[in-house]
Image 1 (tube, rainbow, N blue to C red):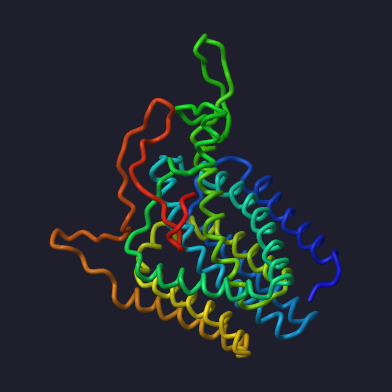
Image 2 (image 1 turned 60 degrees about the horizontal axis):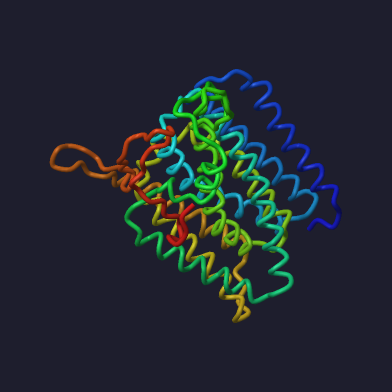
Length: 349
């Protein structure tokens, strides 16, 4: 679709302006994001995405517009997994509500860069080695089946190699220092030395978690389109909406108990779509959009119509695998006794 660098430059500039306005104007002062504010930002992000999609329809035609819409819907739906993990991390590390926006802001900024690199690499591999499509397809089918069978979502921050490396280089303060990622603490000799705050620890976990989840969400969009511009822009709009979605859905996302089955079915369908190209079978984009939207809508409706029943004591087990054990040790990090298992269930962050 794009044969010039200008659309990339313009799109990147618009995204940077949106982020600058968000952090420098609307969130200049740290504050807890309420439901009403989160709802406004969520609606704004969706409206901007649809306006961009209308621009694609006007300048590039119906097929690229349908590809963008399908990719955006897939990415937005798969972002629910991120919200589950964000809820756990913020709760476990007791991140003050007024500082959660800052973590998500910088986490999303890092995600934009990392996903851009991954999409460029994926586009290069597909162009150079066509058989990569079948690898992606098989991986998505495997991930979808494993997601459907997986009973728990678990995390193990201490198993994060990036976090372990950071702790070797930089000490971690036992306390938060406002919204700062770095602070100064007294060293062995009494001299002040630079240290990371727990807020930086949470940011690193957010970044690496998104990187793991991107491993299957990006190939899923490549099943819809081979256009890197469509893949990247649909990813960006979904990521930009993820932050406000978190504040909007954090308290109710556990109610959608059948959504995981819907997401797994989407991954299996998308993976099968990629594998079908080996037999020269092409699934129309409009049909793909209908199937993806239908599966997600069905899972949400089923969750609302058939809510989880309370146990004998009247409690609901909304968040399986979110049990946390351990106390904070001398460096301010919890002694974690839980695992993080991504959608493919094979990699620790």
